[in-house]
Image 1 (cartoon, rainbow, N blue to C red):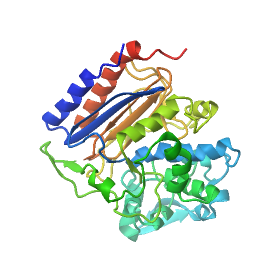
Image 2: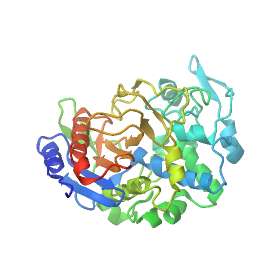
Image 3: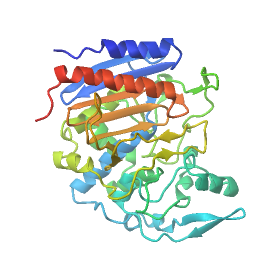
Image 4: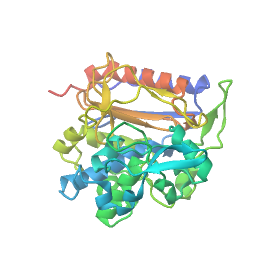
Length: 384
């Protein structure tokens, strides 16, 4: 039986017609290729999206290629590869308006960068870091200025899960090991082999013309053009947030992970990456936003979860939805994806809407995932 996407199509069309979104696209992939794609509203067949933090899994894939080749150790210190990382100190607090800094108790490792336990934070999710920027005038990471990476750590490496600029530093590790810019390396080893022909850190004029505009949810629930966007230029190719592409391109990337690495990674690496690498460290019950215009507070699902290498992990089967061991993450412009290797299915839903974790988009996302799994039993045989 073919994958019947009529319920998903109706869901997406409805999200546009009821004013929840101005443009939305969804894609479902199996190991053999795409199973469904639909775009609605201002989104079209070849619309470009800001991948934002969906860039992280791709940059991590590049680093995992070096692990496979024996050129990168997961437990190597970041400083041993990038000496400048060793200059980062921990922000303990403030004496008046003066930041109180100290050396970290341990050195962050490559594995900790991949699991967001390296001590690095984001200004929009850390009150300490937000205050640091306010009192010092140092640029934050969404300015496109490379010195924004050199703000202090917010905790000692290996002690807590803290979402931050870890994957930006991981991208710099890839650049150092490859002797190439991150985009150049990805073009050769990920984008090119997978046919991701529209994915880039530097969209050209034609690609920018296809870029869905960013809208902002207003207090009354309506949408208006947002004043927030990624910087038009960046001093580095930001592995944490800087790529743009089509939903089809991202589907090709997800398909490679479903398809035992799809020729860009070994199956053993894929399986290893999608295991718990946080150990005893717990994912927080709430990511509290310090910039409500950019992100809402993000509560964790009340289910067992952790982090693998580059992916958030759901560690329990969700009835009618994803399987235990599914990898997932999202982008700040309300785009979301999951990769379920047990049921051999992946889904990605993309909008360009702020703030992140918009209630109406999340409701649409849940409906999308449930509609996908209603089809899965008939369309895609489960992995034995």
